[in-house]
Image (cartoon, rainbow, N blue to C red; front, side, top):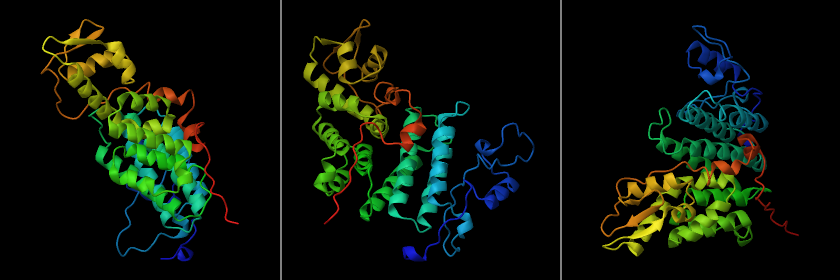
Length: 358
């Protein structure tokens, strides 16, 4: 259906009143959406907290009327609320937060797709939604007991978010000042992917030359080449959102670096390296994390400050385990809230504004 035939959303609430009433009746309100102190048998939705949930469009079902669709400014306000209030909740597990936020952001993308919206407006909403999702997924960390958060589903939703945003960029309308940064996030999230790199290399040279995307390309190259020193040196310099995007690849990169060290230094008598060297090389959060990494790969320790590379001892079992990522991710917030990061450009981002043809 052409864009001109699509309606324009008119709902001014984060969740349409009809949906709030329906979910109240069916007792399907999430606890994040209930007014504080409401502990009754049938809780009431708080209009300031309830956010429209995702509902898969059914074949043959009529499109929702404009009154059930939120216009871009309301969608952006909903994303701001999710980033500023829900994502920062201290009374809920990160898994519960991620599951709730991911579902509501999926509904945001669907509302955009079902109405007539300018690409510039749509891109701003999609950028904020994707940034929020990347952050809440990164905060889950390596904990295998994620409860309601399905890692595979969350990964699929991140890729879906990238797809929606990059299609918006590809339509050519603009300007999109944050495009270079978000194309870089796409490459970092898919680090090592031949297909992702191919897609990025099809972008205009002037866009690829922007600092955010240029650095992402350099990180991808270092990762492919197994240049651990350069890779982790570059990772240290990334802002917060790119660090969230690349976090899922850090454990594999550390394992690869440790394997290369084992091949280079292992001997029958054993060679010792200081744990401090590993902490610096691999951007670990301290000697204890270095000890855990070495022991997980069968390398014996030399007291509390060294690791011994003995021939035949290095091993790899299962998937590499992630760490705490304080140095490489969390410390980069530098006192800012997630809402501030999501709703404004990163300090390191440089605007990309294509020259108008004269």
